[in-house]
Picture 1: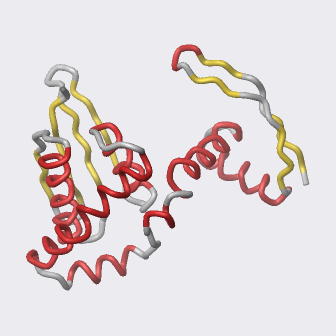
Picture 2 (picture 1 turned 180 degrees about the vertical axis):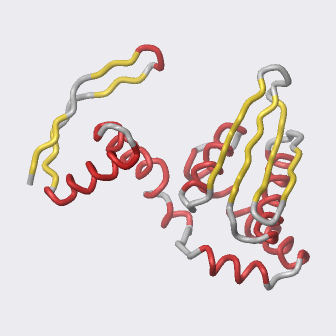
Amino acid sequence: MATIQAHNISDNSIQRSSKSITFRIEEDSIKKLRAEAQKQGISLNSFVNQVLKSHLEWHIFEPKVGFVHILKPVVEQLFTKMNKDQIIQIAVSTGRDEVQNAVYFMKGKIDLDSFLSWFENRMKNSSIHVNHTFDQSSRCHTYVIKHDICENWSFYLKEIIEYFFNNELQKKVEVSTSSSMVTLKFQEG
């Protein structure tokens, strides 16, 4: 076992502070943490904070809201074999209610910020890439979700996103899909 000690840091520019705390961590775990931090090109402290934040904001909730881990090829096979009506049925009967319940349970509220934060975390924790840009002049947010699963998966995500924006958030959204990507755009405000 080795000891890792953090230092007091206060970053007033983003109103966060950290406290010094000492943990005893198995040496093998420390080696793995250091190696992964180095691979990502960040400090060990930053990486450990990311791991803890991810666990506290996502992983502890997964079993409580009913998430199961499933390989992408399995999802691809299942969704490829379904027709559009079946996908809509799944999105309507389970996806919409369960997504709403999961967002509320994990974030404590349902609004634009909590939904987008939840959705982005959901995609990232499913090894799906998300890119968010904001155009200052048009005040337009664009999210590009690259999943590499199948066109029907894009269609399913589109149904969920449109439902949430139109019904829960009362906000106009433009969603386009391809076989491996979903793009959503909406105006701020």
